[in-house]
Image (cartoon, rainbow over all chains, first blue to last red; front, side, top):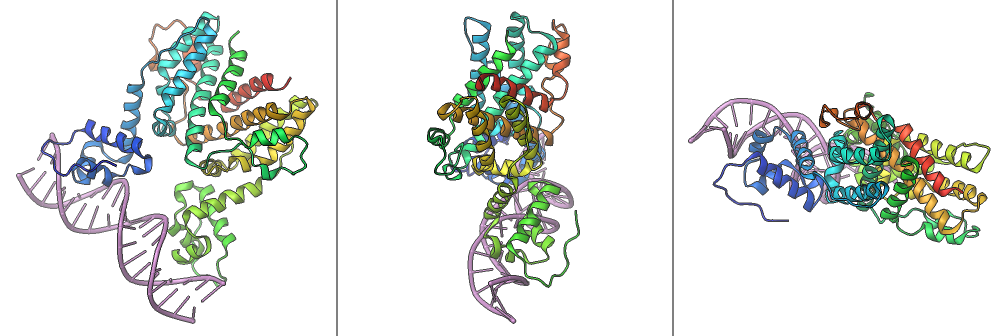
Length: 208
Length: 208
DNA sequence: ACCTGAACACCGTTCAAGT
DNA sequence: ACCTGAACACCGTTCAAGT
């Protein structure tokens, strides 16, 4: 936790409010973003934040818009269209994972679509190369987008709790016939592996 | 919103606290569950709730445990193992969807595993019939569980915001070569279809 | 064993008043 | 144009005191 700016000579700006709010969220989590704490961090009265951004809800909208405009495109590569789509999806997952708090907020506000806009167009280009267009391409894009967003949302939420196990060994009879299964289920979830498995299964279906 | 019980002759019980808390959440959402509102609904002082359940966090734990013990098993059918697994997955999705608020809480608390325990054992039985056991079965169970939980979490969160579109038509150049794609992308997400697509792709991979 | 009111340290937000 | 303090209606939680 950085110490609050005690006094300030410059007026606060809207961008500065957004910057500081982002910092508070990324250093802690969304619950650290209170209007009073934000004001303390900025060295102003709470009420002056209301002048700049309206209210807390509008501030959250601004944070999401900032995220969207910061995301931009992502580097990806591969020899075949399928390899490029795989690379693209993995890169987007990693990129979103840098802002897990924000993507949860974006999701709640129905802004996931806008967030993925650059990815959609790159994906549409790759799909067109393998002859997938129109509603089929839309389905593929929707499914991949869902898979990526879900992976980040699920891993993020789970990582706040106890290390998420898939299974609870105690729920299985001690005499259960497949001890290797029970043992494997009690390991922590390997999210990247689950992601890759789902991705590759989807691509088998979606990319001819 | 039901009117609060004005006076009461019986002592409050822990179960009654949990019941009322569940009702508050399911009739509204998690933000409706405040200790003060709960007390008003029960017709007691706020502080007496603390005597029964500890604090708000412990109450949320109790709600999740209640959900888990209420879930139990689910009916499913089908001629082939694959059909039965598909039916099982769909039924679990529907079942969880009856308690979207609670499953978000369960997920945050790392209790998804316990929630899915009955499903895991049914699934293990079906997988064994097609020769999938051990770590392979654990992977399959983990992937299916992730898919079901993600579907509910994503659809639930999205449904609080504006009707989620996959794509924003305005983000595409008006001259884009595939208008059918752009049009299809701007329709609301069909979550059951996305769920079934992902499920069937996973099963192609996981069930021989 | 169960309940109570008072108190504390927080929230978001509005408003009238300042420069 | 920008900032301020006071005030309101909320939170969760603790505690000493009641029966």
